Image (cartoon, rainbow, N blue to C red; front, top):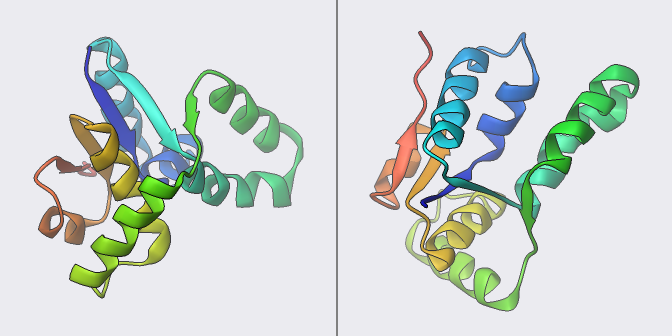
Length: 133
């Protein structure tokens, strides 16, 4: 069984039908589930994704809560933080939350990292950029 780590961009798009990348994000996550891969959500991606649902509340928040109840949320640990620091040292353009997501995936030995950010392919060969149709 493989391990897939989605970026915040993928999670936000999957939960928001109006997002430009909605269909691509849903397809990418569905492919991972169909392949019986374990989806691991770094806690920083969970926090970033929950901003809008918490601001709006109601059904948007309930939908996000239902989605995340079925996911493995990976806590931030010192090894992930150290690896993220190393990524930032080598890739100064990389934002800290993004470095933490990538570091989590790399430290766990993930098979794939899903993102909508094309720049991430410069950081790790496991990065797969979701494509909008």
